[in-house]
Image 1: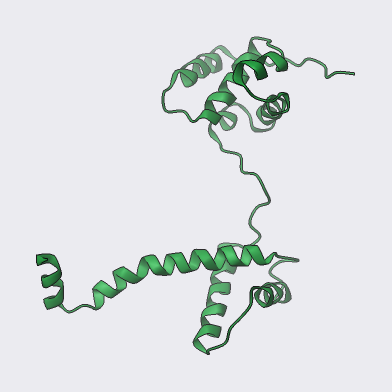
Image 2: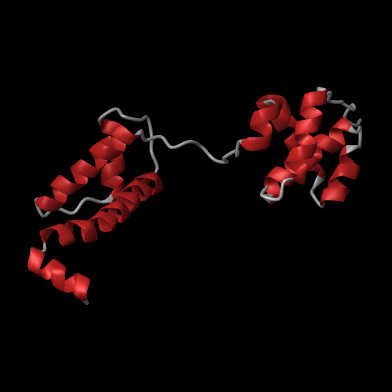
Length: 168
């Protein structure tokens, strides 16, 4: 038993926009494929034909059509769908986590990722959390701190040293 054929109807304005959108040279491959799948659907091409023309799997074409139904015309063409679960930690919780680790480090204590994950759950911020999520947050914090460190060290230099650096 196969799937029943569905059709899509676009307004004249949407069809014109889609044609101009496809002819744009600054599209990513994903955006171009999405637009072409929609154009093929409008032209009543079968999923198999569309998949063959675009060198995509049949399942991918079906998922693109489903995404159009969920997102609508503009979001389907312009929004980038992210896979995976959303991040459980809000920016406020991330800041608190960073502060907690900084305090522990200042006291000379070493805190494991497992202990941090347990602490976040104990405080009631989330029901459960993976140590990988904790690792990503801390890694991002370290990268931000490193990027800010050279700027801070330049501010600490005396004006005479800054003049020598500029001259060199």
